[in-house]
Image (cartoon, rainbow, N blue to C red):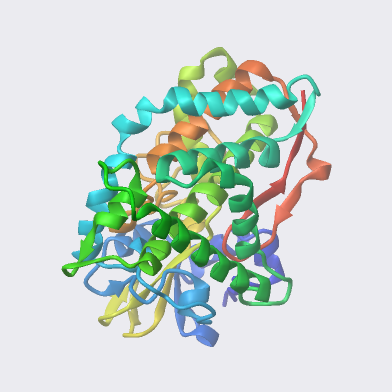
Length: 391
């Protein structure tokens, strides 16, 4: 019987062998120690992501909220169910729609070229800290309304919030403190913006004007909503980008195709998103007993959506462990699915497209120094803290 523990050393080092065993031997897997279920197959995760009858996000969507309760699951877009979630999300969607994002492409490209100009003459750079992180936080500031002057502070704050310690199956004390600091910072942004009485300029203004159950949101609740955008916009994307850079270096023939024909880059990015999804799982709680894969899930139990496992499911993808920029994947789970699909997906796709276009134009035959890669080793987000390249 397969033994799955998201905190075990073998899973932290390389979860894919365990994910394969789960899909084959125990696709709806019970974690007795935590009274939680893990869904490993694509269809199960896809369908459960859209089940708002039996599953709820209101009790939290990640381990520190649902299992250890290290931090309280206060309402935010990720911790709400329809119809309230739908109403608030719809009010904000204008700022994340494809047309608006396309209109910002030149500004995003400017962020990218500014970064590359800083190191292009050096012949080497760290694509996480000198490129991906900087572009991601500048785009998040532009997209959401965070002050760009706070970009460095935001990066540091998110890193402290997500930091983990070996052998500790929970947030660190410094992470809990960083969470409180993050809330205070975001509440302050909301409070400072309340005096603005013009037309909305960004999502913070929408949150200030929004009503839920007939009442305006407090600064504290707005801070909770903004956490989702702060963390998602600044931490996850650099992981996607850096693993994309690594895969293209490992498959130089495919990289050459992109150099010759940059129009292939969006499809290649989609394969990168499928192949190396950084978020290992998000969660729901059972609010009404249901059955998935022949297993009975009871009210109050937690449910883990193992996205990277689902994105490598042989039942959905042909030869899923093969990296192929020409793969056509009608469905992937890299941005989630259903009412909680990633709000910033269009921004992430645009950032990735522009970054790869500029990299493959200005330093097409870069080499990754794999001996100096620094990995993030957490149960929640996999990726790199540092990845040096030479060109």
